[in-house]
Figure 1: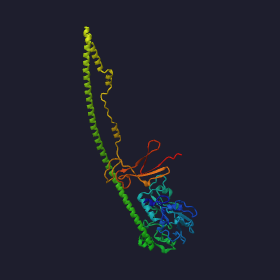
Figure 2 (figure 1 turned 120 degrees about the vertical axis):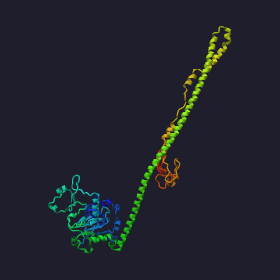
Figure 3 (figure 1 turned 180 degrees about the vertical axis):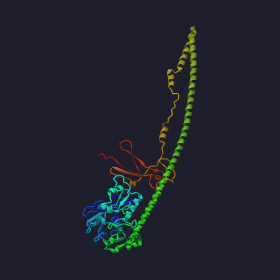
Figure 4 (figure 1 turned 180 degrees about the horizontal axis):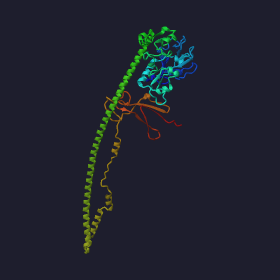
Length: 523
């Protein structure tokens, strides 16, 4: 509601609000600052086409008649000449006769023309002032001094004529009770500038006439559409006594539809406005209800996200535990295979040692026999076996294979086995989540990549040296966030482009459409 209580010109809460004929409100000080002679350019440069209130909507409020020239008057002067006029911005720049000042509404850009009284002719917007006062009192019940230089202190008194709140120190220095200020009415600080303590028997909340100090406003002029006092009826409003009603009766008639609607046209217009307002309120209520339901669904989705995260953590824990169990079983099998290889290798070495020992024993016996034969003194006996021993010694020497074979055997590894864990490490590094999960109410799809996208021929085009390609997900899939999505959600497709120079493909990510521009053709 605070936006409704702020002046469209100064953007602050209304201070002494006045009501323009176009039913928009301004602070009195802002209205005085905005008024200017008709021949001078207006201060507001806003385009009337972009203004929140258009001429058509202003006509709906019965400001301008459909048959007149776009000018109405609201007189507050003593003569029959009206004190203010309102016209559309496109009237050609010709103000009505007698208009000495004009004001352009900052909301709807309608121009109001005044006599020499200027913006002070505008009626006080008392309902707005009362609402602002109540709002300020509800927002901050403790009013503060408006004259303190530093941190404002709590106000203790309010001057009705100056319309300023003072603390005790500022009242003594800024508003002494002497000279012209001695006649000012001081009272307790309130949201409204009117003080109930200075009016004696006047009921609290009774409005005071601005032109006749101390006189209560008890009448309402229907022609000028302002509240007046008894002295105003004798003075400025004597020319139209038949249009003056008691304030209470006018207020009651304004609030009661049957008494306020004087003719059938106004009644139909009010009924139309009431119907439109009811429909707008109904639509607004539906929007608010749907928004509330959407917020509740979002809150429920937040709780569901927490639940799914807990379930996902449990699933990760179970699957990783299962993988650890499989890895432990694989470790046991690998250790068993290593042990079996060790035993086979040891048996092979033992067999080789046995064969070499037997061969060595045979060779040693032959060597000893040959040495004893060389000691034989009988030449005939030595010649009988000498050739045979020479052949046997050469054969035995050749059976050992030489020193190179022994060195080659020494260089061979004892166990020619190495554990290859690189594929497993790569698999562990690639262990991650796959964003393929079925929508609510759909069956689970296999955790595999989605199919190839389908091209949309009617959306594909080629122009000059550029080609535009459009595609859509295959049946059963949908772009993440799209309505009517079925199956796993696809976040997007990754398009790889070839530069045509034999280099690597260049990645270019797009959702559903891609435009590729080739290099200019060589001449």
